[in-house]
Image (tube, rainbow, N blue to C red; front, side, top):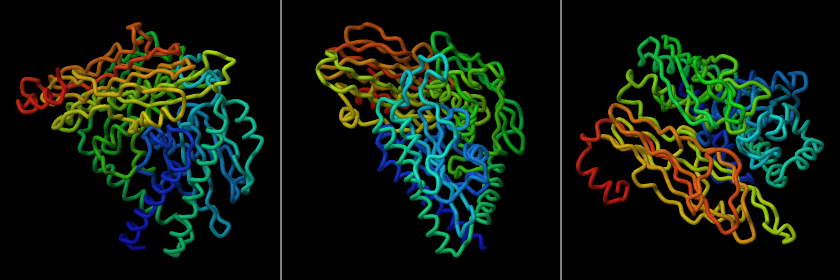
Length: 534
């Protein structure tokens, strides 16, 4: 096959998985998928190696799912993989890091031969247990655990599995609907792949996969050589749950790859902020790719050159049955941690630290009068603080980095349940000062509608430890959580918002970059005019 023909087919594969992802977005029930894009989608060869991923998705999902399909092949068994099958799990250690993410894998057969797999992941609104939050002390409390198993066999859906799901979650319609959406979007990918193979008169993807992996491996290793061979270290302190967490990385770079060792990082926590190593690996790989090869398509070969290790008992290497429900709270800091290690080697690339972890919350809305007949509802919303300032640009305000998810619009959140978002605005003075200013956080005020109260699950960080500036830049502002009368809320755990009251979230800002005295006077004037600085 000519190189040009292979390149055309490679681009076609990327368009196929993007359509696969958009099919999931358009059919999903949960706002986390439909509105925020908290998902991933990809196509794999017959050995379970990722050939292409959709642009729509998060690094935490995409990069963990890249390793997950091999687990499906092993657990299902090659002798039990049939045409028309669909496989499922939310195993945090064999999937994407916590029980709220379901991964679904569908095999692709052509002329009776297995030629590929399509896989996708999405965050569902509820999996039972304590609900989405950090309060559990074991994974058993965090919800329904579905091991790798068949969602459908030869086209026949496993109704026993769906019956178990329906009786163990609070929002059965949404969750079961999302499971069908996951399998259905894989079917969209399968149909488009067959059309492509027909058009190019191919029987399988073996030669194309070899081309993709060869070109990607060569290009990735070339980009790594922009980083001098050597050892780099960094440390970061974040809030954790009750006790601060120290994150430590030793990054070893060779001509052939980069290895991150997290020895020295704090021990696992009694609550669900622990991180499976596969999730830490995902955000380390993302850090390296975004710094060295931001335009590189993500696939098996681009990820294979990045490896990790961590001692057992480390918060970045949680083991079953340790609780991991909000693994993103610590896991999202891995990217800034690893970028900080190479900041001096790449001073024109690496930004200051940002807010990092998403400020997600889960609301369990319940009627204040149990006899009122008002139904219980589960509401999920993602929110972001500011990113760190970049060497040549200010930080981005209220933007998710490194996760990349969007927030749910206030209107969509209000449609999902009895909640009113009274205020959602940028937070003045929250971006760290510098030659380049850190991105601003935001202020969100919300509360229950008449007749309801909230059990509000907090999972917030950078309330005690701000995003640090770089090269003389100032720190970003820390976050705050409190009721409208000033009563402070804990940053983590389930707490009550009574009827008629509102909760105020002040999200953290990103760190500044460079000496503030070197900031362009016109930028200073503009900051004041726009209200970014008081």
